[in-house]
Amino acid sequence: MIYKVISKKEFAGFIDALVQSNRSFGPRQVATDLRGDAIYQFQPVHSVDEIAFDYSATASSAKHFFLPFQEELSHFHFHGNDWEQQISYEANPVVLIGLRACDISALNILDDVLLNGHFPSPGYLARRKNSFVIGMDHLPLADCFCKSMNHHTVTTGFNLFCSDIGDHYYLSINSSKAFSFLREFETRDPNDDDNCMLVERRKVIQNGFQTDIDVTALPTILDIEFDSPVWEKWGNKCLNCGTCAMVCPSCYCYALTESFTTNLKGASREKKLYSCNLVDFAVVAGGHNFRPKNGDRLKYRYYHQHRGFAENASQQICVGCNRCGRACLAGINPKDVINDLRMEKESCMICVSSSPRKI
Amino acid sequence: MGEKITQQGVPFERLKIASFDFTCCEGCQLQLTNRESSLPDFLGLLDVRNFREISSERHDDYDIALIEGSISRPDEVERLLKIRKQAKILVAFGTCACFGGVNNLKNNHSIQNLIDEVYPGMAIETLPVRKISDLVKVDLSIPGCPVDKGEVERVMVSLVTGSRVTLPKYPVCVECKAQLTTCLFELGEICLGPLTRAGCNAICTSGNTPCLGCRGPAEEINMAAFFELVKERGLSLDDLHEKLACYNAFEPFPSHEA
Ligand code: SF4
Ligand code: SF4
Ligand code: SF4
Ligand code: SF4
Ligand code: SF4
Image (tube, rainbow over all chains, first blue to last red; front, top):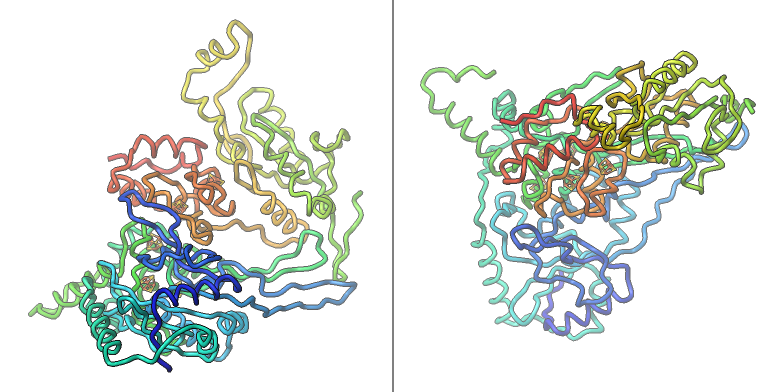
């Protein structure tokens, strides 16, 4: 990693040059909600003034730049009694501006699952390699809990990370591409004052969290509370709408379909992002559903997010952005669900008699 | 017509199809001729026996009958029963056929009042509106006001190739979120997306208009929780009832009005 300092004015010039000559996306306001708060999404940007550098959080994550909501994985052409499969792993280069530390952490988690396993995903790899990720720090929102998940800072997975130190950005440069782009702009090596300001900034961020979820021993608690009535309680609220997984930066589940083209001269294999909350997520041949109840499905989402599956080395994959909590119409959010589970657990621990029977 | 299409050595038979309109706007049938880019391919799957919007030829030897519209006249009942006898697969085609559709608003009034209002002094034979499955067995439903032509193509391809016909089981929100649409609840509106079967690519919500549930209920919807969240947000239950009644698609679900 190389560290540099750049004035905000010079930085604007750098970003402007970058977005003018590349397909770029950054946070932009797309609407204003009932309370008068701005709603942001990562949207195409063509000049630096279109970017809302002071944005709060995007409603949806940046995941879909790497895992599109829908994509054709391969196309089959039939001719006579023969056929050929056409697969393309091409990914157009893209510049992504303004990702938060948690967003980048989520990409690192996706790397783990999709690149470091037995069957690396070539499509994901192509998109990851062809992206230029610029991270930006921010003061935590009232409901951010990435610090609890230890994802409020990030040291890999980006090309450039910018920390706001007043009139300047403190740049962490993590790729030769970023380094050579920046060479054309005026930067300097950090001096003692800059370092001091960076430490200060980090402290302010650290101390700025208002939401803390106690995740100590959470995987164990989740195991113990497998049959907890908490799941039924929250499951009864769940609409099975999949919104939580769609907006989540680390949910990666998908559905695959294969279908003939309308002229029957070919076929297509399509992938769509899916969610474990959707009613037929665990349906197998013969129509059997392994998770028939809302509570079962919700439980597994929390299991994967907060306990981890074997495929990602039993690591938690939640980074604490609370996008799911903000987007859930039913008010289901990690903080309340986990606190409920914890209370369940703790009330059992102080019981002198044996634990109450679970329904 | 009737000749085989062969692919990979497997012969496929064109579908002997007929399309009939009942009480409706004929918008769903019109969709059949939409999507020009794939229209020749689509028609290539079909042996059209009876379809007044595209051909004046009439034959009664069809296997598949698309029934568009709801039933609101005695002569329609007779015609429907006759079609049922001939069709091997009877398809409720579009929201009116599947649920009654907007026509169902008629049932909020007495038949005599309606006649007095619309056809004063005329001898009109008219019935309360019914969906197709109220009268005959329906083998397949393709909901939508209007139907989505892409979905119709997929269904026809499945029928030709003998693969399973499936519709999405999950609600519209999935498709809505995939387009980064701002949720209409955030803007203070009631949207039936969480209750409604996906497959329209959230065409209304992505255009900033709430979903009114034209595709009918998704599988295992949580109506109780939906009512709860509408109340918690202080939104109007009257508005909710009006939306739920728009296409009559949620009739089987208790209204949870506490
Ligand atoms: S938890 Fe909320 S967002 Fe997720 S599926 Fe259930 S209702 Fe939808
Ligand atoms: S939480 Fe659910 S949708 Fe998300 S990655 Fe895990 S299993 Fe898939
Ligand atoms: S589970 Fe929720 S809080 Fe955790 S990463 Fe996903 S969207 Fe963010
Ligand atoms: S606008 Fe409607 S369909 Fe879209 S997420 Fe909100 S409730 Fe669901
Ligand atoms: S968004 Fe709702 S009302 Fe609109 S087409 Fe889709 S299902 Fe019908």
